[in-house]
Image (spheres, rainbow, N blue to C red):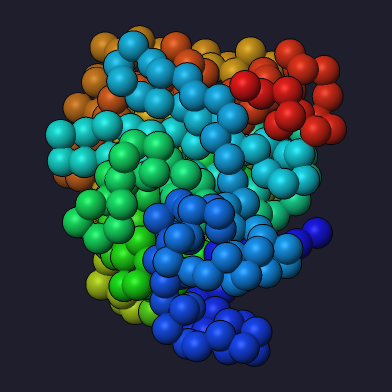
Length: 358
């Protein structure tokens, strides 16, 4: 398969271009064009022979939008096609302050959390840096955005299908490319990385000097109950995760965030609220409550909005910083992995499923 030029930094691209006999400034033109979402045929600043050479050896845009679903609340759910026929998905959330895109980092996932559709088929493969970046570039262009101040996507959350720290090297390379001033130039402060709590990788990531907002899937203050919701919790205890979070705060000065999906009767009782308060009070963290987007294969249900606000009130009364995330995109299957799974079922198989999308 052809190589993907979006995998390379500007300096790496200069080496590729000069080895092909072109002047280094051409790399800058190509780099900006790639980050703007252009195909080689659209790069009219380049000579026709150079465009043809690039077309022969490389892929410009490795991610294509194959289907878009628009929710009643304005949320847009994207089904992306990859060059090997695999599918991934992303969600664009439109806020008053700008657009936030939730991206995937793997095709499938090996974490198999109890509430999530991404792990139903296991991990198929990791995404390359170019493919994670390509999700953002594709949506930014579809929304009429460019580079710099012309960008439409201003915030990115690594909270789609997959565990970012299970795809460690590619995720780190992606984050460096994302913040490159010559590319999309999205600051790490506008990026949130969500992990299920891979403790060794959390310590390693704290040394990368990439100060993103670190969010950790918690979902219970009790180890035994968390293990039922998240199998990875059998490997790492909550105390170990908290220590890794404290280390991240010490290294970066960035407070950490705990994601907490409210599952009716499982983790949304007064006992759980009290447990969270005992666990987190006084720590430089925030709790982000999320009402469950139910996955039919999982058999779990969400409580009412009133119950969610009652849980939130208990946390706030106990001295925790907490919010309840507004439920978005529910009518277009907004939970991780749902859209991809439904489409694959409808087209009867994963092989070249992207070709069946309109």
